[in-house]
Structure formats: structure tokens, C-alpha cells
Length: 291
Image (cartoon, rainbow, N blue to C red):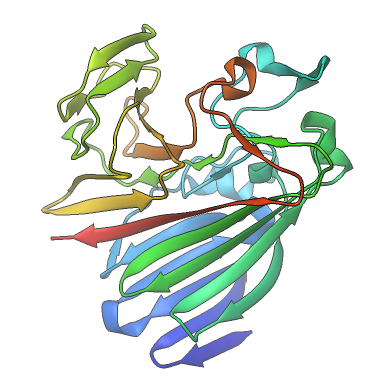
């Protein structure tokens, strides 16, 4: 399956699962997406450089949580205390980071008219409703254009009641260094290692930390950090008001994650987005490599 126009190409091939590849010749960029494994991006090469870490064993194993790529987080980011939350007097159990990353997404279309793009969707099912009792449809368009990867999102509420959404992304960047300076205008960070809010000035050393650190109060929805002698820049819609930074000792990655609210939002309700019946939350997330 191939689409090609004006230096852009969309193709698909099989590598355990069906993989879609977006290519832009002029910038030597390519993006790999696997709809069956949660609509995940498993590769993002911009300007000839691969930005993402991927543990291939976890990708191949259909029962494993993928460590690497860009997992989609919905309808929660992070964890719930005891793996559960209560809504309208009913207790529900949900795995870390929600139901979308475990689901097989549908391919709705592909195009080379405005960059190379692939549109995927995920609709609620009996399986998702056991953990999240709402009717929904997610529609994501992954677009490679001008050397940037953009993910355009719509979170549609097909229920008759308002729907809580705590959404985000979990990019694993192929960076071994744990002590970096992040360019953000956030002034405060919540350290989940001791649950203390601390001043933030840019430098952040993840060495020895088990849990993540969340930037809380940035007024500009973007963050940049070193990637070799260049910078990775993330920009996103204002609804992503929390940026979580995390890594694992001894593993060559740093995760920089835009979330719509801090951890446990379905329980504490702080920053929780409510989408009204028949409406959709629309958002975008862009990754680029800058000199």
C-alpha cells in the first residue's frame, strides 16, 4: 500500500505487525506507526537522526507494555492509587496510562497532500467500558511535514453525560544522559519521589530518581532539551498543562511527556478536562529537531 506525492510517501509493511511509514525526502525524515499496538509511533527519524528509544522485545510481545516509542495515554496518564478510581459511586479498575495503548486502532486514511499523514481511530468497546464507562471515539492524524512530526487529536464524547479526559503522550527519547537542562518557563515542579513542590530553574538531574518530576506552571506550552549538539523541541496545545520528565537508571532514554493534568486526576479531579456530550476535545502535539 503506497501513496506518493511531491516528495512525500506513505507505505506499509509487515514486521510482526503491520507498520505504516511516513517519509519526507527533502528533510530525510521518516516516522513508523503501528496501529495494532495502541496506535504507537515506534520510530521518528527527523533530519536523518532517530530520536526515539525502543525496546524491541516489548514491542514484539503482544502482552507486554511497550517500553519505547510514543505510547498514547488515555483516559488517564500515570497510575491510580490501588489501580482504581470511583465515578458516580461506582469503583472501576484501570491499568497504568489507560486503555488506548493496549487497543488495536483502525486506519481511517492516509494522504500525501499536506505532508505525509496517517489517520487512525479508536472507539469504545465492551472491554474499554469495563474500565472507563463512556462511549468515545479518538481520531489521531500523524503528520510528517517540514521535518516535524505533528499528532493532531480529537477526543470525542459519544456518551449522554460529560466525559472526563486525562490524556497525554509518553515519548521515549534516545538520550543516555540523565542530567539535562530543560528550556521551559515553568517555575515549579512536583517531585513524585517525595511528593514535594520545588522551584524549577531548568537543570534537572534524574540520576538516582525512581519516580518522575512534573513541571506544573508553564505558561508557554513548549519545552526543549539537548539532543547531542542540537535540541529537541516539543510544542503542544495549552490543554497539556503538565509536563512529566522521567527515566530509568541504566537505560538510555529520557521521557518528556505532555499531560493534560497531574497524576491521579480521575481521583483528585484537579485539572481534569470534562468533554460535554456530542463535543470533542481537540489538541495537537509536535516534535521537531532544532540547531
